[in-house]
Length: 143
Image (cartoon, rainbow, N blue to C red; front, side):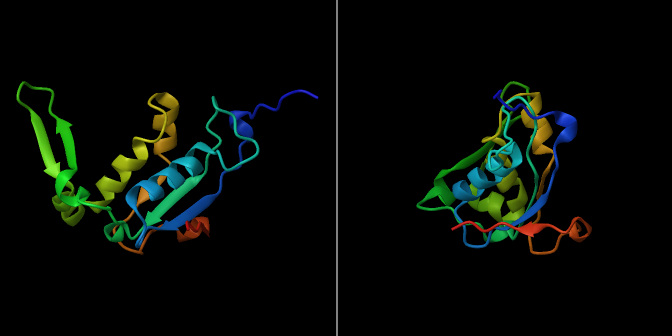
């Protein structure tokens, strides 16, 4: 018996919706990254994008434990000298909670072209409304 390798054109993709209300950011991000990579499938192949689409709703209700709201910083750089911008997560969660969740999930995906392809299958929304009802997403529960 030979080892199974998934073919990129033979992968069947499903849509999953995750409710982020009350979940810690890290646990939510690891589970979303796991689904995006396809590690929940028996046909997982590391060099092929076998993952599914993930819709995360209620991003504004995600929880950061401890003092991370005040101590953790979201950093970005313009590329120019002195161009480092720092935003505390408390402000980020008030203004753009979607970006905080996207940033956490993206950090848990591979840092290459395959990871960028996986990242395009992530959709994050501030509240419970999303425009992907036509895809008939299944609910994915996280303990």
